Length: 220
Image (cartoon, rainbow, N blue to C red):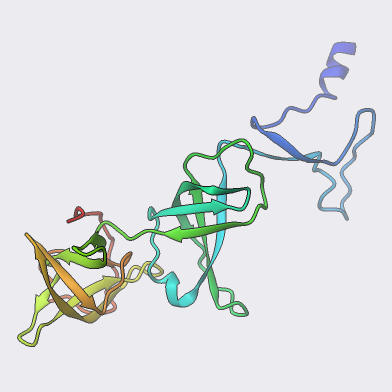
């Protein structure tokens, strides 16, 4: 009976991790109070091997993000180091007061010195469909596959861009550049690195159509 009573006083954490805050102490009776939503909480924990970053992204840039997009994370704690990350989700409701949308970025290789609520800076990389390649002379140019384009006679073309917030198509005119790399065409204006475009036959597509994106393409 004594062993049974003792076992009922033991509380096991549902996961391995590090305790951030302890809301009780040894020997203290802890009871659930109906008017206190925090009363069932004994401790707050985090898993140092599974950390993520919350990023407030300006709305004018949020449309360029997608789940799975790679990112670079920097902390003031390590001013000379960069950490790799990956976008895991985009919050569905924007912050009207800040004019931002929150993105969550998973740290791919967190280190033990990282702690919750640390301030970080995040830089997002482009997608696999619209990539940035290094041009001769050290500048950067944007290339997309020729199958994404419906070319016009005036050196412009039409592409269909997938809005990552609602997965709907947007028809957009782009300015073609002079550079080409096999099946890849330079885009001089109208498209940003990180935006996802439709590859293949685009005749018959209509703006506003909802699609299910699939990853294609390689860097030129």
